[in-house]
Image (cartoon, rainbow, N blue to C red; front, top):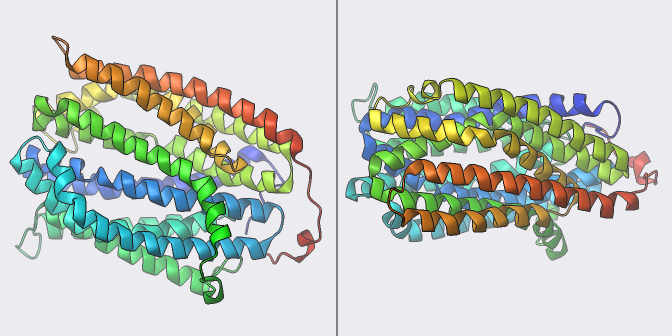
Length: 460
């Protein structure tokens, strides 16, 4: 366990953000490695995989519910030196994750055909999407265990073990991808099905490694079968904090679904270009997202300890660091966006769509960094509803004009990209306003904690 209630706030943020960023980068490589080899199979294969993989936003929505709720409650428990509550939350989150994993398999195989069929531009894209999704669903189900364990460690101020597991699992995926997708060594290519299978095997290996770490090395929170009996009050606490962030990811799923639906008349190349561009954008976002992921436990422990001014300082530092990083990345994307796209596809139409997307959408990078930082603060404060309201407002003000634009003569893809930049900027303003309101309501109530629990917590 790392005590984040003392010492330099920027140093804590950067210390935690570095391994988080590395781990997230390697996590993103899951998608990029698969995309690299799938791109060799043609536009329909790319479009099918990126369309089907959007189902992962639903899975990520549910994992966010468990992950954010678990991390926030454990961070606050660490701040007030309540190890017993931290351990209770950890074990109950694992039980919830097991239930969600089972539901993912049952529901995923039940709706896969309908979902991919609704968005696919043509039969070839539909076939590729289903092949990929059917083999990746087990991996999606296993992500609940990974997120639960990783979030618990993050709440205690530890990020390196999660980073190491992510790196090793991505390396495994990188080894398996060419073997299963392209048939290297075996001579039996599985195509897009191999991409899904490679990711599933790599995620399963990650679960095994994280389990080994908790059994052999972790001391502050640990597996305890006595705490696996369902405790509804704990579930309620986890869900109260986690449901709004989960709702944000669900809204992102809807947001992307609307875009794929609006651009499907432009053909598979347009869907593939948007898919490649959006995945690259997610990778570019990693530095700011890592800062936001570090913000939540740093601020959360200080909320638990009752240090209101350190909570404010956490946001100021995170917002400044994030803004500098995102502005630099904006300049890179304005310079030559094709550089990011060319490693994944040489199809001229796909490259053109992806490059135009990046050149326009990069103007909202700084605003995105502010939104990420504010979201981390809402998690730390234990009230994530304002972040959900902010995301929902963006969906509303985007979808209605987007649908209208699509019916107008001369409608082009870049009209959607500029609309996205405008609406995300408005979302950033709303997030900042809501966070300042939350500060005024919550921080004056915080009192430094020096109770007896502070003397009994066992260090890691």
